[in-house]
Image 1: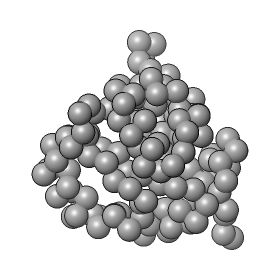
Image 2: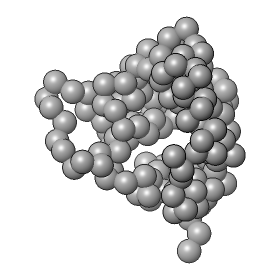
Image 3: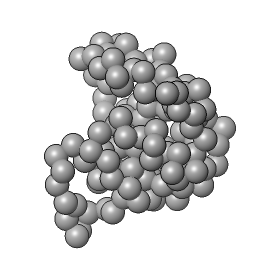
Length: 141
């Protein structure tokens, strides 16, 4: 389990202008092992594992905790995730500025699914999208 070089470069650029937090659901030990395996800690300002908290995504409380760690208000925070029922629903529940669904499959959400504010097919689309929704992101050319 590793991060691709282009993803590492994108995270490095994003972190110059915005605070980044990794939020993952699941068992503490399993998730911490995955985080260690991909060596992604240096790309984030904070990492929160749901299994270490009172509640996991989609509960608003874990999103508020993440906002507190980053020193931002929920209305200034964007949730980027690949799961509609936990990531996107949680961001909506917490009243975040925006939710972004990483839709790798290109599928259409069911009408019963939470509806994200934005959809991308790759995380590499994030810098341009964040800039368009008024997040302070500097792009290197």
